[in-house]
Length: 159
Ligand code: SME
Image (cartoon, rainbow, N blue to C red; front, side, top):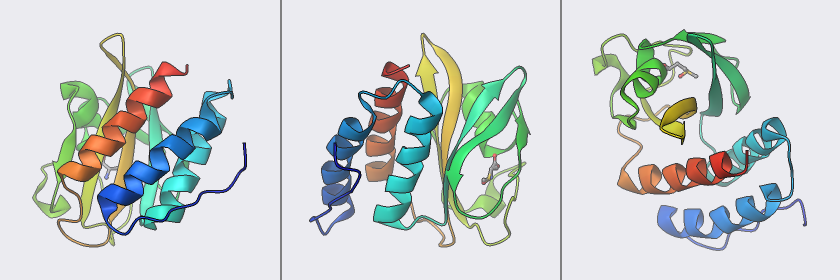
């Protein structure tokens, strides 16, 4: 597998549609979850230039920072706290158009304005979350939710 990402599409949907099979190819034969999460972050950052994209992984009653791309971030998030902890507690995607309006949002960076968090489900349990932050308000929509959710399902299925 070539360790390069090629994207020809123009729209966000086209870019995701081109990217996901390449992430599949990049990760399918690697047994290390950390390596696969790390390369996934790098690929998402490269294609979409997200301000921050990364994984938090369940560690007891907290989420602990995993592979990511972007500025340094909070290392631990408690169950039910912030956007990430809420996605864990509720087992639901959190699409946050304005982080200042989300009660208890944890501001790792004051530059972050909107956010989407996808829970990673294995046997009906959350094992981690994928968190993407933007410096623009309302920067994520159903297209991001659809493809990022598919990506999480794929990554969980590998491990
Ligand atoms: N904003 C998140 C914390 C993680 S950072 O965005 C990287 C939250 O409220 O859970």
